[in-house]
Length: 125
Image 1 (tube, helix red, strand yellow):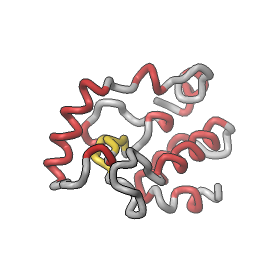
Image 2: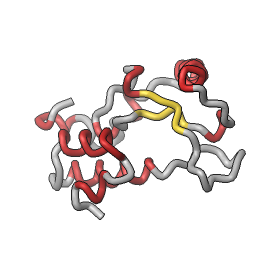
Image 3: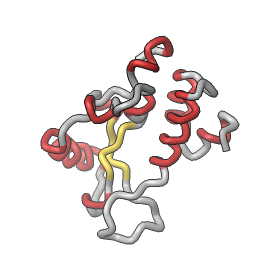
Image 4: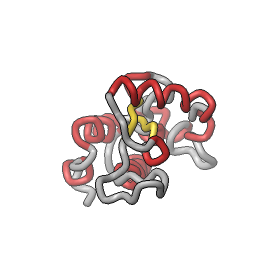
């Protein structure tokens, strides 16, 4: 993924991520192994096997260094399924990226450094 190919990849209409996202068949086993490696003991149905740099920001779909078990938010009701506050941040970064307000490098660096401050760091909200 590069700044030069954004329009034909993550910013193209018709859904880039669905074409590169690994199947649940593959990620289910990986998620359990990854959770064990982090010592995660929470309810797996409420945890998301997430990309540190999301697919919509050009993150590698299969690199284990880009994947981790993200626990549900602390205020999340157990058994309610996946619901993480990081997801809307990723979407806002993607929107700004495709609108030309930020670069790919800025979006990726902000999400990796601290997703909770990524929007304010880039003056997006």
